[in-house]
Image (tube, rainbow, N blue to C red; front, top):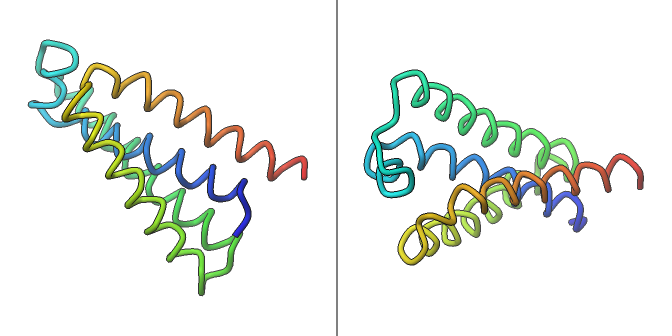
Length: 115
């Protein structure tokens, strides 16, 4: 398990779960004060599911299909716990944290590319 793959997977998982979370009326209203439009809901759901699938593919290809999905589930679990805690105590930080997680994923991808 390389740290770059783990950073990429954790960042993708958190950003994807944050997008799926923001596609729900309740969480979107808690954070932005309004319900999301239909177009925004579809965009957030597509981005969320695409991020989850991309994380699984990256983990599987990089770590092998025997260990990659295990690492993906671990990163997904950690990202989920972090997101639940953030939603419970500081919901307005979900959007910046999702952007930061995407930055972490890009940094992990850059480390993989240049390593």
